[in-house]
Image 1 (tube, one colour):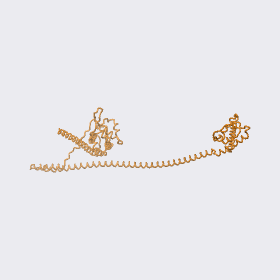
Image 2 (cartoon, rainbow, N blue to C red; image 1 turned 60 degrees about the vertical axis):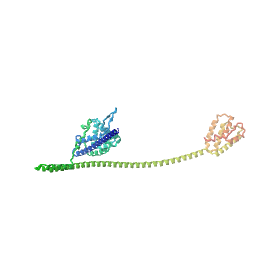
Image 3 (cartoon, rainbow, N blue to C red; image 1 turned 180 degrees about the vertical axis):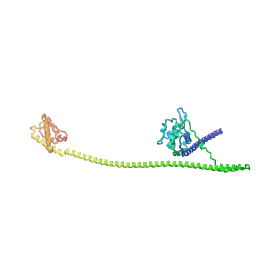
Image 4 (cartoon, helix red, strand yellow; image 1 turned 45 degrees about the vertical axis):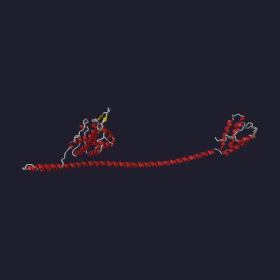
Length: 450
């Protein structure tokens, strides 16, 4: 049993190694044939225009289609089955970020309906725009999308992908002319690669020399009656040898010329990219300088505004302080002092005492309104500035007192119109029976500012 298990493991390991070798050979063959087809296209473009009728282009398109379809995952249907998928589904999503791309134009083409036909139309349009290498590079950079569409071991997931993008760069030097309504866009049949143009056998120089020696040996071992025709064969073989050598040199020269053109195109593209990078760098530097200048100006403006606001705040504070001082002074001047109030009270008490001592028997104070008028008159006499106002007030009081009834009980309210000193002076009068006894010190309303 152990031997059977070991044998099974060896078979499975051998099978995996064979599968990996076959996948590597397949990738290498496709990349090599693609490189040969690109060189053939560049060589053919020197003599004629490349269009749909060119066999070199048809072979190149078939090779590129096989490379982009290598190990492409199928699309899972609703019922769980896997249906075949075209590389256009991958290109449509992966190349969407390319600037000025032709994806939308190909999607809106009327005569192209199938996904395979759209992919072939995209190859032709990209070649005419000279952006095929740019499209492939952008698609390969989107590694997440590439992993979603391709299985492990695909060309676009291996190291050969970078080689593919580099060798397609040389096609930018060719002017292509295609008709997007031809039979080449038919998506019903897959493309087939023609390997015969690349399977030319070239005999080596050692093999040619060994053939010549073999012929000489055969000639010497023949009949002794050899004719001059048999003697001339070595010279003919030498001529063929020189012709083959010239052919090989010519092939090397063409290969070198193609490489030179490819390198020149690569250098031109890199110079263009460098010039664009330099211009973008200059624009960025200029933008940074403009932003710094604008930032400095804004900073200066904000500083000026802050200083101006501080000055205005200082002025407002000074004005507020001045207004408070003026208001305090005004209120202080409007309200009389305590000393003046005492003097006015003493003068009013004296005047009332005199009037009561002289006219008490005659009962001159017949009503409370008359007493208030006398008090107001006394205050006016003490303040010369308010003499005119006093006269007006006295007249108003006289008018109010005309309709009043003389009631002795109102005399008891006189204490509310005088101070304590006046109350003490009034207690000595004969009319003490009519006065009410105050319980606290009260000020006269005539002296209270309104």
